[in-house]
Image 1: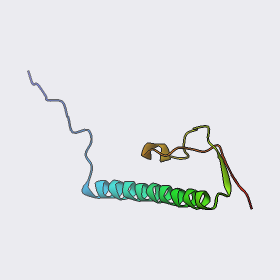
Image 2: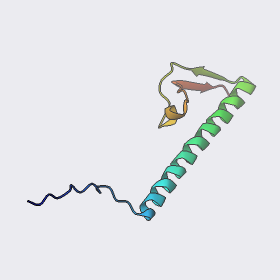
Image 3: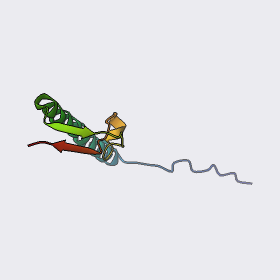
Image 4: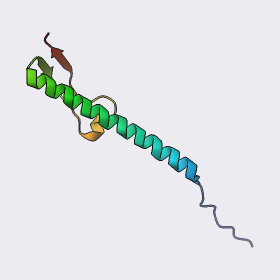
Amino acid sequence: MTDTAPNRRRFRWSLRTIFVVVTALGCWLGYEVNWIRERHVVVADFVMYRAYRVASNSPSAPSFLWLFGEKGYTAVVVYA
């Protein structure tokens, strides 16, 4: 009777694969954080000049911004 142990090495990733995944995740995270920073700058400029009206019905934020605690806007009207 030969008992063979089950092969538990299902996921074997090379170091190159881990580096690529971490780099891609870092680029995505940097892009999202930059987008949040730019949104805050634009909203702060609108608030300073009081040339806006925001209709906030608390929808979800675009893309994955809701993961970072951002709220969405249904409409932003800018008066020229």
